[in-house]
Image (tube, rainbow, N blue to C red):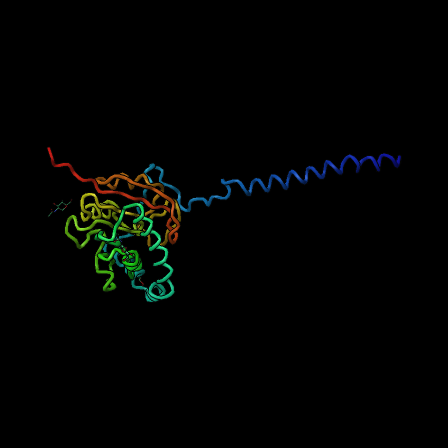
Length: 252
Ligand SMILES: *[C@@H]1O[C@H](CO)[C@@H](O)[C@H](O)[C@H]1NC(C)=O
Ligand SMILES: *[C@@H]1O[C@H](CO)[C@@H](O)[C@H](O)[C@H]1NC(C)=O
Ligand SMILES: *[C@@H]1O[C@H](CO)[C@@H](O)[C@H](O)[C@H]1NC(C)=O
């Protein structure tokens, strides 16, 4: 065998193999950086009707639904965590949220404020921390003095009571239209509603609906105008949606 053919082969192959290896590394690197691959896939398939809001099946009656919600709210382990380890951390985050809303003139010290699905009242405490002293929460289980008993499908308040309503439990509503209808009923004209929602993301097993875009909210808030949609990072919820109840013009 001609010894020169031996030495020639590696000389030609080496740079070729090296660049092949480098290209593969580079492609793999590019692929892992691609936003398409980094995005978490939605955990539920969006509804095919394009509705963007899906009610979870499996509740045989309204009472069964309420029992399930109560199971979470009354869970002693969870309540312990909410009132101890979670308390300061949540108040800090919510105080920042409400402070920011104040700076955007969406809430003021004089606002009469409601927190819907308030659990043990961290949001109510946070409202008071930023100076909104007339604040109260509702939940299926009361936690006085911050949270009174109330079902968000049938709020225990008269029409046009509040200047401001906040909720991060929209996903728990079995009847989203009622949930929103009650907010619009109890808000004063010109009152502001702020929702924190999860869009196309896993919520929890107590959720009663899944939201795939903010579009369904625009349809549910019939008597309000959309003011803002922004990204937030608030305990698994990623989107802040702000509505203002329209002031009806009775002048004609
Ligand atoms: C509530 O929780 C209890 C015990 O944890 C369980 O036995 C019961 O089936 C649950 N009820 C519902 C409606 O989920
Ligand atoms: C609102 O309340 C906070 C906290 O009590 C206070 O520091 C602030 O000065 C008040 N703002 C106005 C405009 O009264
Ligand atoms: C309260 O508001 C609801 C819905 O907007 C309306 O149907 C109802 O008549 C109002 N009730 C009173 C007492 O004004």
